[in-house]
Image 1 (cartoon, rainbow, N blue to C red):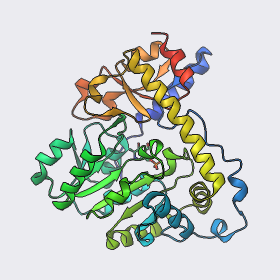
Image 2 (cartoon, protein in one colour; image 1 turned 45 degrees about the vertical axis):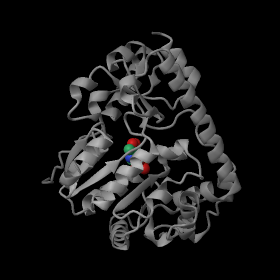
Image 3 (spheres, rainbow, N blue to C red; image 1 turned 45 degrees about the horizontal axis):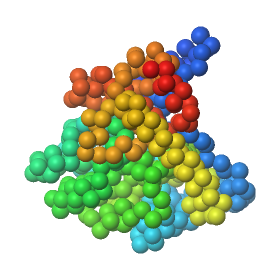
Length: 367
Ligand SMILES: Cc1ncc(COP(=O)(O)O)c(C=O)c1O
């Protein structure tokens, strides 16, 4: 069949996971899967939450409104914008991947600027959509090179995937403000932030008045529901949102109604809020212990956290993929996540630190 090949590649991380499973089968030995990108300390307990869902309701059985279920959009407004947003400027997406795909396709810019260590999917979406991308290394570099960013869109991912470094909110906001004043579009894609922040977080409210800022959010990480494929996009440009909604309609015909009602329950009902709280508390506790332990034992690649705090669900270990594999620890070589810092990255690996503390300790104690 004649088809148009995009040239995009399957995530190498999937291949690493498959290889680990094969090794486990062949050797009968256990491996620790730190190659993954999901919170794995505990699953969120939905037992009480699903009892609130009326499966016989049109909200679940019939085509959803293409810009999102009204009750979910109201709940997003309350939880993320403290009721201050205009819900017509919030669009429910089928997770951040599809939102970013639509955004990268829609924006009339010459290139997308990514952090120098970036989530590989950004580059693959660019490849599929024929968009050029380039990288920046620090926020200062963005400020200093503002004049060159005229026809670019800048992606901000904080805490970053793969590094797991949290920059200061003030510094991030200052750069976003300057970019916005210079007419540069900012895509704030930080799905790991809300794992560590609660409903009193004001970041999105502070971004709300800025021109040309897009907020891309996902429920995959902060409530541990990557299987549901739900997120949202906010922009204060009605023209952008209208086109975004049109594309949801003609590409997806709306976002899964059940998944939207499930997330609605998590954001709005007492049972949902309780489940989210318990999930976040336990997840954060073990992440904190894991980072503390890695730091204490000298396994954290400190050079990545000189001007930031290690706070993500990921961290950079100063061990290579092979060194970790010797101890039966799965990871992702850091050079998979960069195009211009491959040499520097070779000796490091990205590990997921959102796993039970005792397990991580047990494996790293082998060093
Ligand atoms: C930085 C970043 N953005 C977005 C996503 C996509 O999340 P989802 O499509 O599950 O909402 C991920 C997933 O790993 C990510 O790491």
